[in-house]
Length: 172
Image (cartoon, rainbow, N blue to C red):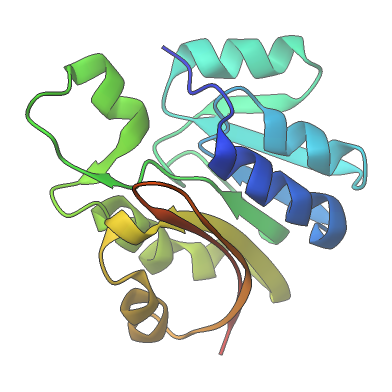
């Protein structure tokens, strides 16, 4: 199962088209929508996903892609890191296959925290992270501060049951 673009993907895509620069890493590429948006603007794009089916799909679209659990197989530093993570809290009613593409952990932000702990090691000094998450994801802003990121809210979008947030992060 591959995550098909939804409101969160389109919100982040808007800012990838504006802000992505240099060497780009798309973490959790899914359908590849964000890598493709970056490819139209930047020369070097690397997409990663834990799902081999997503990796194969993105490779067919002409993007360099590898199977990786976040940064486990990634080498080098990037000017832009894009992350549209699974960010919803765990729901026991959801099947295991679907959980892989929607659930960010028990509280919804555990995967984001893992990402934030590691991302600095792969980001150029003046690099940026473009990330999206939900009001259902717990206190993500606290995690930005905990791991030493300056944040800038790019846009928020309200929906019936949640609010989505697109942020730009830089290393303090």
